[in-house]
Image (cartoon, rainbow, N blue to C red; front, side):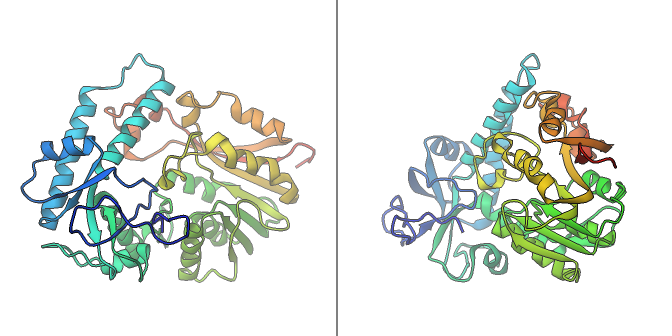
Amino acid sequence: MNTEQTTGGAPAWCEQLPEGEPAAVWHSEAGFAAPAAIEYADDTIRADQALKKMRNAIGLLWRGDFQNGRQLLQALGRRLDRKTKTARLSADEPLAARFHRYRMQQAQRARLLGLVLIRIESDNSIALRRAPDWEQALLQVYGPAHPPMLVSLRELLGVVGAYEWRRKGVPIANCDFRIHPHYGVFSPSRAEYLTLVMQAALPEKCHSAFDIGTGTGVLSILLAKRGIAQIVATDSSPLAVACAQENVDRLQLGAQISVQQRPFFPEGRADLLVCNPPWLPGKVTSSLDAAVYDPNEQMLQGYLQNARQHLSPGGQIWLIMSDLAQLLGLRAPNAMARHFSNNGLRVMAVYETKPTHARASDSSDPLHEARARETTSLWCLAPIDTEN
């Protein structure tokens, strides 16, 4: 829980609450700071009036009908989207600059929409008219015991949506199982890279594997389904470790897959090393960015630099990457080849596919020029000093 903390370790109570409002803690799973000021808002406020206040960094603590609060949030989103469309990114602007401006616009949109606030009581109830019974969904993210909290309505809706994903599971293309992602853990929504893992030829006599940055555990599960007897899945995030362990347990694969909280490699060596790091180099501005952006390519570099010492003789190092960063101008065209060479690795095989997600064919996307050309690759690597 990313509840703000005082220096003594106790929850930081909001100082900005309207007069007469019972004490509450500011809470943001994304790590956003509390608003500079907080005012009440209810069914009488108009979207334009609310947006003006939010642009002045005022949080609006909703006191009206809950469903009307959702409608207000949707109306605010439409206004912000219309404004973004009227200030379209220039097609003549270099893609890298266009990307950074687009990302800044999206971050600003998220911060503004995050200023519609809801109070959650200690038992995870919401004391508003027509508020849904979401205690079970909130329990999985916020826990059973906490002070009253103020949270963003936008985040709250995300928590509930993630709960439904976790409850129902996400189907995996061409597989007979589902993955149940937790809130804050990247969902395996892009099936093309999973298909590559199922198609690629395994190393000869492949009995063990390490899955680095496992997330939901989906790659480990695919490798187990392919018959690898011993797999260690690691992740630095405790949320991801809990998620991966739950998915392994659901599928009764605990005899094959061990999940560990580690930043990179476990002890020992394996016949196959697998990693699907974040595909874009860039600064992480919220906790939810960590699955998309790799600051200074720390995970990519760390994986490639340390892989050889954890690889069994005759084994392979698999790296799953998109070339979107190169197409956007965020990474040099020959950067991957240079990374491999600098770490004494050679390419044994490459499996490639085109993305199938909706944004790849959306011509209105400001980054469509790059997304339409994107290729996802599974690089099969081996140390240069090995013969096969």
